[in-house]
Length: 247
Image 1 (tube, rainbow, N blue to C red):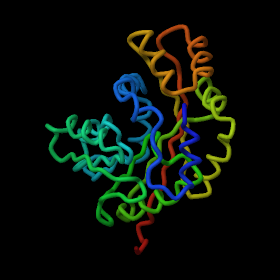
Image 2: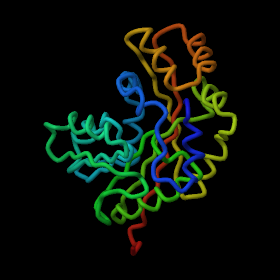
Image 3: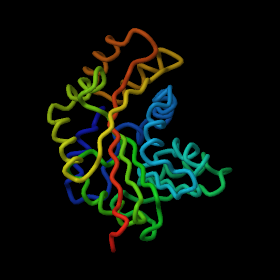
Image 4: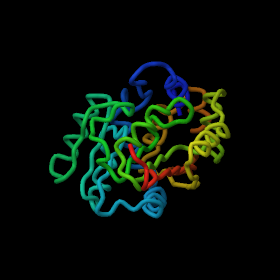
């Protein structure tokens, strides 16, 4: 993913927000990407199996244009999307305007605009929590979680063909084993998922790959993908806040 690891490495700097290299600049193309991702619902099925949010209060960190908020709202008690980029917050609010119990707020992962112990599930999908350097966000998620609540992080699997090697080729400093060790050392479980990205048009597939990768890697990925779909590996990491923890 273009800039994916650059953003991860930049997270160690004393800044509140690292600009997203794709959705901030091409939100319409990213909308196509969101619709194409997980065509069979594999990520949603794994997430629900690990931490079902039915009747619970959900926070989606780095919610972007709010694409995932309606899905959570179908069964959750309440849903809050948090996004640092104000133009995306505006888009998210437009998306959820008719959904009761759903809000979109502006803020970074390191300073969620929410009270202590106000959520049962904090979810982040390919946003902020990329490995070493995201400790402030982990601490903030623990702050807003109730005892027994879960932090669920969905991210790309750098070891899974074909997307993982494209990602690693675009950023040689990215070390999938080190990232996985970071989450294991911080008490997270690991569940691997294979999802299908499926597009309606060839030009959409190519446009998405070109906002995700550098020109050279995008050309390689496009050449290696003759049809309208391809598998993408993900990692689902989950950590529960101890029920007896006093904060």
